[in-house]
Length: 501
Image (cartoon, rainbow, N blue to C red; front, side, top):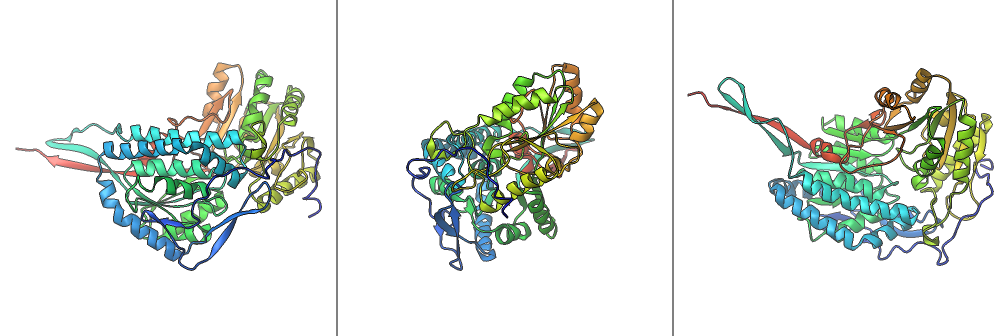
């Protein structure tokens, strides 16, 4: 344990008032059929401020019985909500967007309090959540499918797109509000009802969302059950009245949900981990790449499944690039969100995750990897780890293969083009990747050869609500954002009319 708690030089900016704002806390109870209700067995769990390690509040620890109650409410509400016209659902989604906009700062403060996110990150999350509702409100009114017509002699075919019914969703701790909305907006837009389980570590903005929108949605359309994934998530996945289970989380969580869902042959939507390769060719703009990775590698303290966490750089420019990146990272400001807008890096989410990231760093050091900057914990309360660059990393090292999910970027080298792509694709993940080159032909070829759901060229971690987000291989299947999400959360029905006379 002593090695895991190794500290490095550096300061953590602290809030003068001892923490972020947060405003009024939501009720720490389940939200079912339009109201907050008491937990069935009275059990609760602490929600902890990762900046100070102090308890913020307690929230209900859900049971399978709580899930059953919520699913029954969602099932009862499904026929009426599914029968609403697209225009009517769109108006509700726009009203939700307006309501979130009215409380944007309070939501950002609450997200910062619960997760330790810097102000800029939390505010971006809220703005993106609002945009997601606005986009889905328009997209649900303009769905497209194969044109109605005569495809078999004397028979006219048309395609209906229908709601699935009750959808269960499990959301992660790294983007509690935003990942929740990435599920809520398209699920409701497609005409489904929903039971959502937020992470037990970060449930506050999801509960606040329920509180703020309770008067906008019919009772039972949106429900929240808090508690552990092993209980609440598993019951949602196995429940016979849940038509689909959607999860954003770890690979292990995805496997568990898929196994449970298999018993009732329900549809599964998984957005899982990532280990995004950043392939930097010799002709790349190295300064631009390093500046981009300052954000893309360390946004949300690296607790980002699409983070630019694994650099593969041509050996001829590796030394120069590593120096540029280390200089950028050494200048990052670490602190509590309440310390001011200059803070760029906050804490990790929990004691367990903090120790896991530090163990990865100690293992890398033991394997002979050079620490170019950072490399350990920062002193004081809270789960702060110094922004780190690991250089001269050998091929196949554990730090290049496993998802560290912290403020850590590794740099390894390649000699030839084929080696670069082979190494980039060798990990079991396939969520995102980027390629850096001034050669237009190479960039097009690289995008085709990288096994990832999103490939950026001379950029990284730039998202647009109109574009799909999701992975290949161990990063799961299904798509968030865009009209592809609406397709995922609905079903097609072919109706054929005999018109022979």
